[in-house]
Length: 235
Image 1 (cartoon, rainbow, N blue to C red):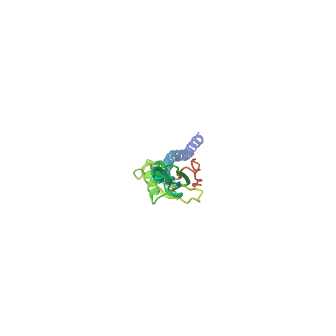
Image 2: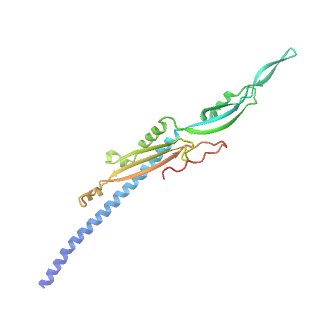
Image 3: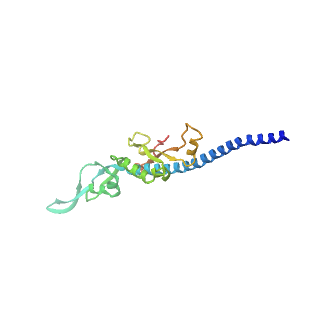
């Protein structure tokens, strides 16, 4: 009987370390699952902030147009056989005008170049967009800050920021016209950081995320159709 009792005590003694290891493993798995779920939610919000930033930058672009204008004719008074009568005369040869599309087309500013007796015409020679100064960059930063993930702000022990803004303004670039925003962020873990004591030398305090967004500045082509989207720049 003494031998059996000793065997049972030995068995219980060997089970305790195994149970401890199992509990540690279960805790580690739970901690990882909880914090990675939080990280994934924050990462999606970081993507949303980047999308808002790139779109705002793209929408800051100014659309331009180049027109060929035939001014037509102007009203005047003609004389024949000692009589005067109203008539129209040519305003001259065709010429080109370049300016903002919003002014020349949307607000019909091209009419200022036409004479008052009709016969004039307007032809669109070219259309494009330009990013002026730091407008795109400033717009991107402002909208990113407005949409930062709450989980990644300093009050929560996290961080998020734009680490790169690329403006594709060269018309020969297949990514023209668009604005690309790369952002990074990190959240402070609430469960995994307790694993630092169990696994010395490994830091589980933060989980990182990085995202890329691209916003396109669409405009009408010479046929009145939307210009094709810029090629992907986040690859």
